[in-house]
Length: 155
Image (cartoon, rainbow, N blue to C red; front, side, top):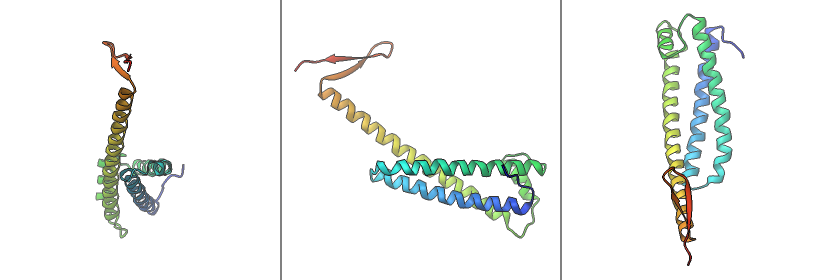
């Protein structure tokens, strides 16, 4: 993995991460739209894209942590905040970092909302399946140890 050695490389990495988060948010928004409109088939490709973007974001994070450690700071929020306090760069790193934090928060909220949409849809499907099984006479009951058994109710 390429290691960041200079401030300019670190700033470039932060900008690239920021831009990647923007792409990630667009994917999450498309996923949300597909879920709301029940275009479930669209979510497969979006999931693959999300996995790819998450891997990229993980690599950016690893590079940032390595850089902070190489500069004598801890690889966490406390470390980045301490490092930011030492910077008086014309690149306006604080603005980039603030944007990055906001984008990460936005992505987290979108992902949480999408998870709720998926969970709600799954519960609906499970209830529908249970109703269909009941209508077909395949009522499943649970025993004291949690095992299931069916009642064959004749018509």
